[in-house]
Length: 325
Image (cartoon, rainbow, N blue to C red; front, top):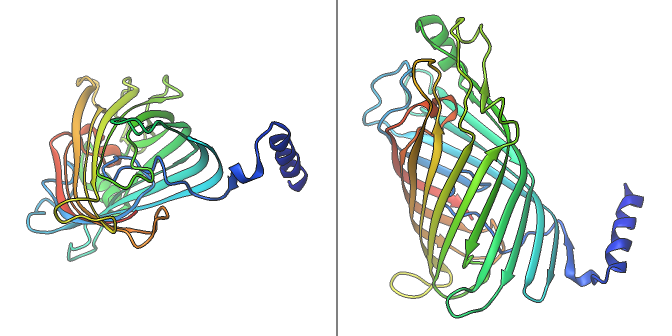
């Protein structure tokens, strides 16, 4: 491995790239995820009230009881290059999201866990124009996602619900986005706009597979809609009312269009628009990524985002969020 590394450095040097322009295992300030990104490597602890959990959830009365949504994310920086107004980065991001009925008195069951990991390439071109300060390209050439409902959920459903199904969501995908006015190291108020698209690598297999034992022999159609797209707005204020460079006010919103799965041969798969809204403040004792704390109000509405429950619409979650930024 050391010989390969030395050869790699020699090739970089011989190509005219200076050593001081290269960094290994160091994060970059640009192309950080927005707090409203549906899929991101941010770590969040959220407590709030869903209007429902899932049609199959065996505890029907959830009114007045908060649920925990825990996001544990990471981003391992591998390589970055910078020169003048250009930056390039390669890293390994990932995250897991667990929905827990923490305050249920009997067993506090886990509802669902989603996890993903992959590769990521980020590039920034700083323009320093009057209205457009930079443009960022973010490419995830390959990532994998899997989801699993909780054991208590699955055991109860399999024993007591006639048409209960356990769906194994597992797929490989790619993702591409473009951002105008990424916050980067900008000091003033910044309005950032992002749009992106995601698709499956193995479209013939879709998002999930099933085992006849886990579906009680019921035939489950494959998913056929393999693209997702989204639009994001992120307004970061470091100047003005209740904001400063150390206490940054943030409004972040994502609108996405995702497939609504169908596990019934008589119901056609559809597409659903969903939104994810955050409003709050980031306290910034450090200028380094993922060393600051954000406090936000959050509201989500649309497709149930949790695992196999992505066949259900009309889901809402309102609560507060503590975010490592």
